[in-house]
Length: 88
Image (cartoon, rainbow, N blue to C red; front, side, top):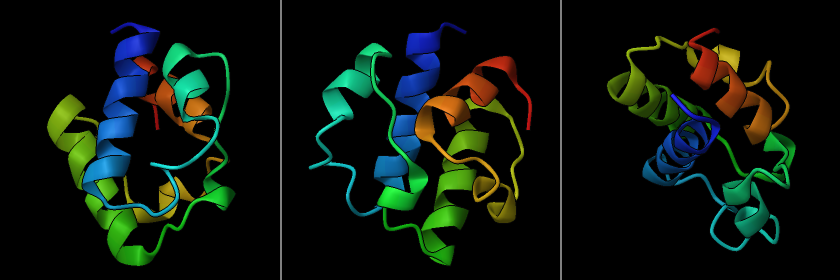
């Protein structure tokens, strides 16, 4: 899996989980290119969104993540790197 594919999987998971703040985030175009990061603390991630995010990642990659693990990662770029490597 390429870095770009991992970033897109993470963005699709964020979108499917309806995590607030991502669509209008000023760093979104840069994140897609791998040039900018988006901190999870700047997004509206509640427990339901965390569960939906985990399900989306698992369906796309087979990587099983517990919702609690999402909050151990500080940014989407770091998360996409973990997804690419298949490590959580």
